[in-house]
Image (cartoon, rainbow, N blue to C red; front, side):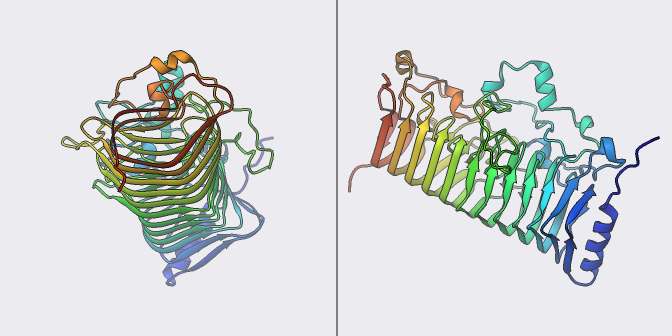
Length: 466
């Protein structure tokens, strides 16, 4: 006797959203209980509320007799990966929206979503993958980056918003969110507040958006970035990500699901890129449109990579403030600033620039010894005007004496990660190609002796005291 398939709520939820939209807006409420669904299409003026005890579960095409909405054509998909280039292949998606909200306190369970997707179709492919993945087999790479044909019918995002104005996502829990728990592209006046996310790839990806508040979110992502700002070419034009505040958030790289259940597991050691677990706040890697007026404050990193600011695909990053950050169990460099020359974009994409970066009141402890805090510009585009103020870095120590003799190349086209250079030649701060570095109250300690110098500055012009 064939077991009956569970009932799908897809049509009923979409009908309720369409009805509310037709009436000029309203609220659609999912009550307590488990609701199984394929793609839900959000419309302007509608609030989707998941009540206490509600679990909205992403259906599995292999089990539940259906499919997610197909990934829409995108003529600009050469310059970023499949996940960034499409929105409709998601559990909840909406485009060209105004005045929408997705609210908790219920939960989204992305059980039927996939975390995988093809890389970009950019022909040059320089810097497409981190150097740490060089030893992976062809079979492993094919699993991490499948062919586009393999994505037919699959959903790979929990929530995707494209060109939404005045959107709120608040109070939700998201478990196993696919490639992105939330992907927001080209949005304005966006609020992401009090979210609890424990997911198998990226947490919050904010791409080519402006006037954004991310507040009070807890994001656990051992396999990829937790909160990341990007400025890709997914919409076919250069759009800066600007006026963004990230505050009172916690990011981590505990075992999948173990933040939600309170066990905070530490079994997983490596992310799929073969570096240590991820779970950080990052700007980049896609930087085509640039970043402007970004504030990151009062955030905590636990068992994760450190703060990363990266410009490698053109664009300008300027006026970034990171303050009052606490980092514990840092799995790569506690601070990583990088200007690179990948230039993934159309012919004529310029070399990117980074300027006016202020990092202050940062305490990082239990840092692995391999990678120092790293500021790595290029001779043709040095990082300009960087202030490090009241920074306290405590490393495990125990680095190798031979590491002090290393002088890695600039590796301009490589994918930006601290591990790209190998172990750092200094154990605390390594800066290269920086024009205007101001250091005020930087303390560096090691739990065990480390034979490398504390600091190494190469082609660095320090700011003169006033």
